[in-house]
Amino acid sequence: MQLTGIEAKVTIVTGAAQGIGEGIGRALVASGARVVLADRNKEALEAISKELRAAGADVLAVPTDLTNDAEIQALVERTIEVYGRIDALVNGAGVFKGAPILDLSVSDYDLVFAVNTRAVFVLTQLVARQMAQQKSGNIVTIASNAALIPRVQQSAYCASKAAVSHLMRCFGLELAQYGIRCNSVLPGAADTPMVQQLRATMKPGDVDEAVQGSLEKFRNAIPLGRLASVEQIANSVLFLLSDQASHITLQDIVVDGGGALGV
Image 1 (cartoon, rainbow, N blue to C red):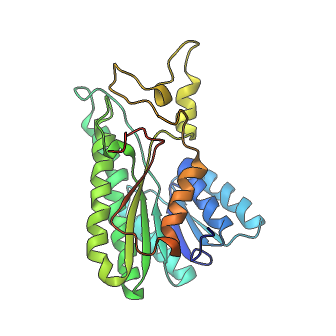
Image 2: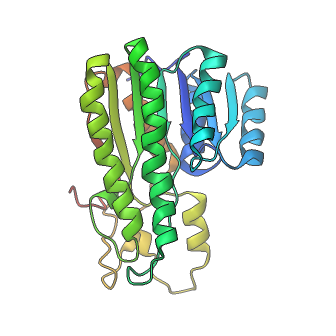
């Protein structure tokens, strides 16, 4: 099946300087979309956008700190200034702070929610106002299968992802009247730079908890026996953005190799 309806669409992608966000941005470019790349890492963002433009892509890089409402507003305004419309939004940015729940600092808890939940609300609301005028739009948020199952030392992350997943359903319910679809993709452990760094600290004989699970930490193994690739997650996002998913909204698409056991 060839996906259609993505080519030439103006699409904002946050968290686009690395990992899943970068993979989604590259996949959109390969599909012919006009892509606005947003991330707070200005140097990495500029390097990626320069590379993509050299290959002929229609790409705009907008360095954005998602904890700053003014910068979020500027991202939306810059997109409309350059392209005159916004067809799609992918909320790909996210942060992780892990700690035992009795030790987790309020500042870390607040930061996780500021990026993973609050910023998604602020940006999605601004973008949706533009989409409502256009009577069309498509919004996909990267949540996590941690939204479905509790995890040891991940309380803030789990709660933020559960919140943003349900937030998308609320957006989707109210925005359907404008022809706007809202869905979430819930990855499990993926082969991203963050996970690669964690695995690099493993000692010989250590159990790869991301794949094999941990009884002590109440973590399920991945039934398929491997991490997700960034491309597999990006493919799920592209499907939701395509015409082939035109009757799908208010849904969570779990891409975790069965790690959440179908919950």
